[in-house]
Structure formats: C-alpha cells, structure tokens
Length: 70
Image (cartoon, rainbow, N blue to C red; front, side, top):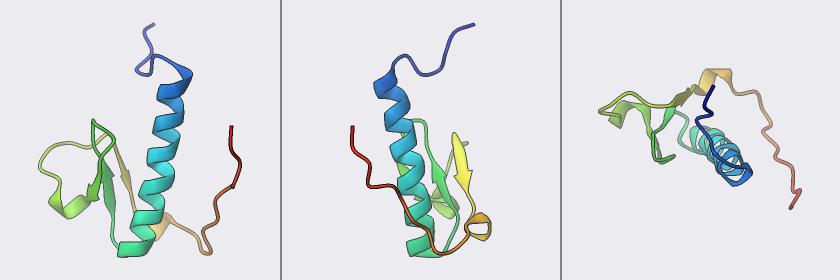
C-alpha cells in the first residue's frame, strides 16, 4: 500500500499544518480547513474539499503546544 506521505519530512509538515490549523481556529474562533497544499483557510472560504477540517467546538482550552525541536 502506498503512503500519501513519502518521507518523515512530509509527516512533520503535516503535523505542523495541524498545529497551525488548531491555533488559527482558536485565534479566528471559527472552523478552518487544511487544503491539499497544506494551506490553512477558514472553512467558509473553502471552494474544494479539504484534506481535514478543524472545528473550533472540538478544541479544548487552554491550547498548549510542545516547544520541542528536532
């Protein structure tokens, strides 16, 4: 089975996009979409199917992120 993500770098980019999307949803107080190119936009502006949707009502507060670097 082929993987959608080809390398560890790809996986790290996806993880970064998810963290950024959660932070954006919290900041905007609205649902956001992660698009095919990992762009993050308000869900209300999405004109095509996103890879993932981050819903603000699913985010618990306070939101904290690891300061871990690799």
